[in-house]
Length: 259
Image (cartoon, rainbow, N blue to C red; front, side, top):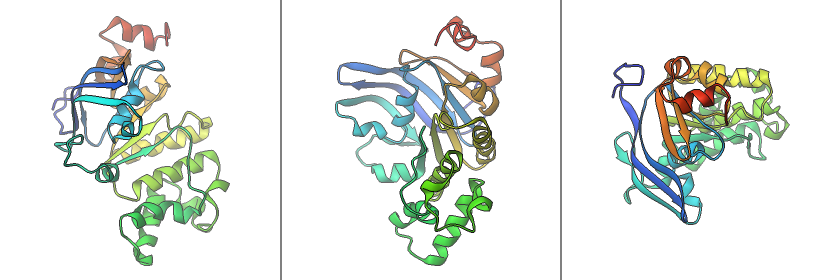
């Protein structure tokens, strides 16, 4: 694929003519985009525009909502994730997710990170120790907690809890990390740490983030998708969208005239 900036890269996610309904309400309307691997793609738009709905579609979180109906295709790594042959557990191992509110388990720091690998059949203490350390290092948290791994995860600060949740997601070795307003509840210092972490992680993972913070999208992402009323209004290289948006509705939104 050619990215909005013109660089030829391999798409890891291909969405084609996607329509999603909650009962009679249509939340997504004919969405077609390709998301490149090992880059950060930001979804922006006002509340209720469909950006979080699309994010949850990428790892089938919407399956849990009664009355959800999907038309079109969502392919990850060339595989249609809504085909009957694909198991949800397989998808969620490849596609990790971090939510708006940090949600560590009421367990130790160690057990939070080891939980996923254990669920996937890893029980060797040596192997789990390696995974826990590597995951915490990847989340830039190891040096802060390495001497207290038995400490309750709930005793950590909000920013540390969110980085622990990222470490927990990375522990099962996903290809893609979804971040749904992952810094919305954090203070500016913690937000900066998560943004710096995202910059580092994009060298190894594909990151798709939903954010209401347009400055964050401008700082962190390489591509930005602007949603309005369930439709993709504009998709371009982030620097192009913020410097010279093509659609007047995009201009109105990023300049603060609505949303």
